[in-house]
Image: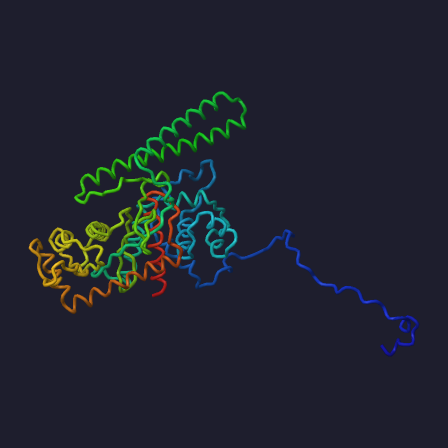
Length: 432
């Protein structure tokens, strides 16, 4: 500055200072970004392990069902490995909505990595999620076999526990038989009105809207018809039951197969009773099932039979809580038909003050007598304490958002449980 300080322009009045110039954010500008999908996720990311697991599965039935073939016209189908990996990773990530997963396929790096540039919509995801229950059951068996080969699971001592899930139906959707009959008449009357209006109105736009309304009315009619069918089945079950219910049965028109069950907080809401059989010491899910029963009584035998059918063997020890205590089931499990399974569950209290719980009852069978003697010993009580570890699996599922199922019908709910069971076993495999 000293070299030019005598120049006229340097000796004039001070120049005014304007507003600071900054680079402002412009967020509505469209940009083209170049990215490497494989570089979006770390080499040891969980999603890569899920993809590796899916690549090792036999998905031949899914590929055989694809109608588009090489040399023929039609749009190529989405690779089933992509859809399988998306739902398994979504279960681990705590996402249970098909719309949410579809959005993540364009916004989140792990989901974009799975898709690899393939577009996926929520309709395809929803259909795939519940359409392959039998295959998912096979995949669960495969996951257990892989863990067993690595020494990460044993089938000698298994635990069974129930988990209550909210159903995709409201309490106000439950109706008694007379109300269901009225609902069916209204639905059929509405369908007839819409059909008549559809035939009389020549306007194409209105015809499309009325056709959509007619489809919705037919779906409502189908739900009410299903509710009436479930009502007849429920009434038949109550007629066969020894304990006659005082209240009149009610069925939901939203999800006819759902029932009002007692939740963990003691309240009664529309829900499902999810049954989970697991290796409690290794935290591995072996089998799942679902029922609308509010009680766990009578569910021990079906699960043992499922284990025998799916895994070709019977466990030696079966751990359950007091809700499963049924002497008929305990006797069956200990018999040759049941495979000689030793049941470990708490001894119920006696109505007689002078008779301890371990004292034999007149109608006890051999299995029940052994059970009473077994649970009265310190060894039996120590083994039973392993059952509490099975509840950790439920805690993991709750943390991942499995509180309410967003699908309707027992088979679809079973599919959701199988997705979570397989995903959980993958996490156990990766943690080893």
